[in-house]
Length: 90
Image (tube, rainbow, N blue to C red; front, side, top):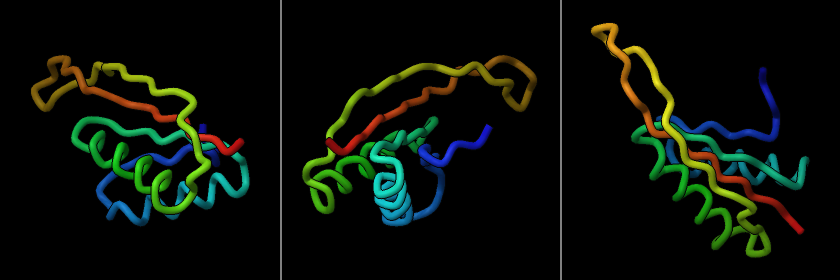
């Protein structure tokens, strides 16, 4: 299911995702940033750039970390780390 208040982090530049977060917060007053694997550090960067440079009143409501089990190229289960960062405006 697709939700408009979730920004999924991938391979695009950080500022693309910062802009997406700013757009979501303007319409929904809260946003969830999701990332898996190597994109986790980019998700943290997006959250911090948004909070420190653009919306100083934006707060972190919660951070959830987990591991998803996926099938690897050889068919065996592989654990992939995930993060969700929930941001909101007061």
